[in-house]
Length: 621
Image (cartoon, rainbow, N blue to C red):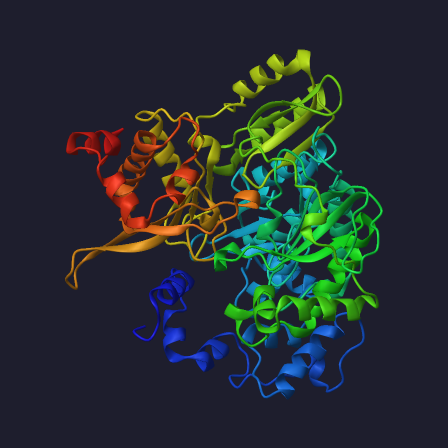
């Protein structure tokens, strides 16, 4: 890979790690296509071998493919596979595989993701199921059902994801249909939760209960959720797609990391649009496009102001433009960001207006009131709701993992003391809402019996980790295990009075969004030694200074190739250096690192390196 940059090498390293694609990539595109059972030349055919595009909403995808082939391009193998059989129509294939106890091969691996099932070999010889909950809000009866299904058909646990969602792992081939039908019976439809589709729609986790929110985003998250489920053209996009609604509450929906981000704002009296027309005072949404932090980009404001009842139709139009113009020849350049880079944002809005059949309202940011402040750790602890005498409780889940027994216990707590609603957050924890003040001690006691708590150290409260190598074929490090070991080691040795967010992600797909962490860690393979027999171990590149919202920033690389065994030692010296050199006791870690150059930071941190005896203590605990 001598012709690739370091960043490209790292991306390819993650892509091929454990996937069995190394030789295919060496042999080139034709071998990859052949392995998938597809034409090596990128030629296309239609279902049944005919030449006419079949009727139905999904015809827009065939026309988009035709346009790119007519322009002299070759479809990537995944697009050819989707054309041969529209993946939403492969339920019968999934039923047959389940009846025969077989896992998918070739193009069926992609197709089965349309039903929410991910075959995760070689990391695990099993399925992972990703679910769908509008805005991350789950009724207690569904939470119990997921617990039961995870126990009967999976590994007995669930993972809360960075899209305020649930994943269930260790599902065997013969259990696939029973598992999915069990979800469907409970009203949980995970159609399109993976592959080239719109993922779980996220919203403010405190929607409807937040004292400072501008608007309750639950109706919008729910409307978008059902729009996606009931429109076939919303499936089979050039690549995956994310949508989020932020209502201005205490906890951010991190909407600026999404392909489409809707941010609530208030417009006061006497404000005008770009045409000089007065704007009716009230709450609106600003539109941002192109967030994809794994590619070092946040969504950018489009200068567009939308009434709440305009958001769904505008989102659908934006997706339609992406369907028609997203790259179907190169998967690495197929996200919305790259259409925006190619066209410019102004043209994308013009094309969206053509689909809508009307102009969008253009309003400068200065015409809108600033968003109410975000509480970076408002998802942990006990907080008052807008409903008098009611509180929500943020429950700490160690790196997002929760057992079936704990899930049932949480559902019981939500029913007994709250309104029966569990709210998942993008920080891999959950909230239980609508609790009377007098019941808070009883809730905390009940959680303690489940080995859960409503408080955490300043390290553990901001700890986010993707699945890692234990369950993902792309990951180059066991992120969840390393995250827990890191927290346990540091908590014994450092007292941190200001929270620091630490994000661990296993590969360049950046599911844990390492670029937006105060400290971001991305997995890599580290060679110990210089000769051909050098041992290769799990390790991390270390980034600092990432943020979101008003604190928006892409983290910069500070250290490379830190072995996992050296991780606690490295992070400890960083935190020690920060505490010893901050200007005030309230200066945040990000404020500190952003006022220093990279070489200055290294010098400061190295001055606080742990001694050899301390290193032994960190390693042995």
